[in-house]
Image 1: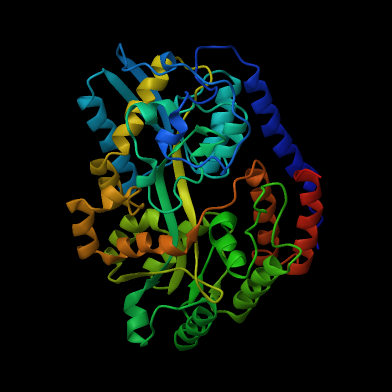
Image 2: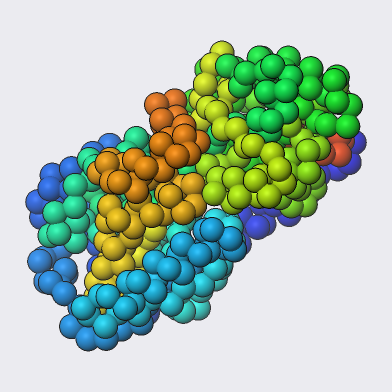
Length: 468
């Protein structure tokens, strides 16, 4: 078995910490990254037991200007690349730029994956050249919030009467930091089970009711069609694999307090790895490609080489289009886990970088956030891309009601919120995720570790990463 370079990974984590420490020592501006305006917590409808540290002194009303007073350009780094997702965000920015009364111009840049956006943002913050708006996932928001990087949006939310209870499911879990609101739901998703319905129907198979049922049916498909893998799943620790360990009774991959790993001592992570390895060795489960794993699996699905996979609902529009072009009907069902259904919340929230930005820039950024959260644009985002409609009121629009009638796949993804949970809030998620990915890759991709050895390796790294 190869010798793993844990020190190298640790150095990467320390490097990111140093970047944020440098950012915290940057120049001062009038950015409102302090505490919440008096009385706004109750008005925002939020709970204050979800995350974060003690509140800082309250801000005055002057911290929240009534409106933007001059034309201003705002830089926005997002994760919505080519295809339907990129088209949507480009249309949203163009519509806002041409319609807002303040002369605000949003300039968007596709900055890559959530991890890439976080890395680029950290570098830009250290250089005091960060964008005003970024999209961040559950691994990045705690890091940015804990360093005081994110603007507190509570006062704007209270001032404009935004009802936080209107956001669906657990989508506000990563909005709150102490008594602040530091992000708003945007590209939110659930993990779903996508399959070649044409093939499954030909074989008289119904969508799986749990992971054990999936294993039986996927094996039948490969037995009948040796050139087709029955199922495939790629490494996405806090999306797919966490849902599996949680269904076995673990807290997830990180403890509820955010300060320790979970599922290592109780044997659940090892069970997930063991079963996954057995499926691959049995020949019916496609081992994830070393690079572009998700894209490779989707191409195999369209080319009728893969019968089913776990995917984010955020890519459903593209998947439906490509499946139709390939002459197959795409099926979508709840994600099967051990003993039933379960899924992790995924996707990203939109955040305002308060550090080194003026009140006018922050106020302008808020106007664009407000625009994206309107029923019209929240509904359009869901219809155009497959991401979830983030508010209950958006689901009542004709856009969503008609979409759900015409394409029940999208309603399936939303209804699955009943079985869905976000990862636990933790400052250590981003770094821990790198070790989890590494351990899984050595077991599933190059077979240089056994599941038991991977767990022991992770325990060693956890002793370094998490507080003792």
